[in-house]
Length: 252
Image (cartoon, rainbow, N blue to C red; front, side, top):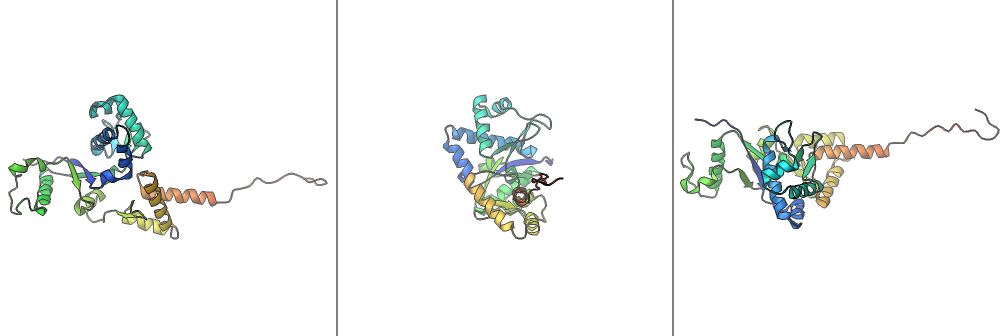
């Protein structure tokens, strides 16, 4: 019987724990515990596109998060405050919490067989399985066939195309001085068209800001447009108030 359910899993790049925000988090008192809570929240948010909520109308509270992570409420409340300061979590208007950059960590497949196929392909590359193997998982490595968490290399073309949502579109690429500004091809083309003399300046500016502050943004393209609008508003001449005062001997 075929399995038509959709499976979600967390994609962690091999340098995930070397990112500034994670290094800072784990260097704190109870930081390893907070890091564990963060990974559990990422997993809980996968099926809701990064939002921490029980369903469409019920966001997770600190008490609920404490229950599902099996931690004390006080520990969870401190962890959430730290996550927000580091830009790892953002509050939404409906009271739910959004896991920042979750779109870079989500993988999904439509069948159990597809997930097993990918696991076998990974093993074949390591010469751990013969290419003419059966469809079933090898009995000595059954645990690797349905992984819920996959730690992958920096570039996985097939999964990156899934995240893009369209096999025919190229995956987003990293730009900027520190290669941490993520833009799709259409977003980059839009910036070049809308900011012909400034697009490269704003990409480098955002790259330096992310590297120095550790802050994360839901959309790098939207952040650049926001900064450009704010800069333009600062340069716009202010409308003065007409001077209706009269000098001595003059009349209105």
